[in-house]
Length: 165
Image (cartoon, rainbow, N blue to C red):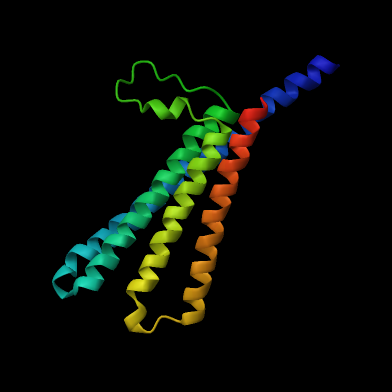
């Protein structure tokens, strides 16, 4: 009976596979949004001042970081929780994809979130002359600081756990 329960629990990890497939589909939606933003940016470039140009580029960078974050979650999550991916025969396979453990995944996720938060904050600062709400700006700063502090605490606790093992 125990072996049967363990086998059932072990096989249940495949329930996560559709989540990762869903993230691939979400990545396609993100690509569509990126293409729309890029098209808007390019077709209106002559009307933009310096600030608008920087904001347009930041929007593209933000979408790119988000896409990278989704890729990290897909590959690392699948490898850590579902099954190993056979990288043989793929000469351009990024080395990190098969080496990110759960701790590394958490750190990469938080680093990406901090970067995305920083871009949102920079966009708000770039829009100060356009009447950005000071309360909204204050909350963006607070949220960003919380993300940064969370990253520091996460790295510190991971380092502590490495020392105890």
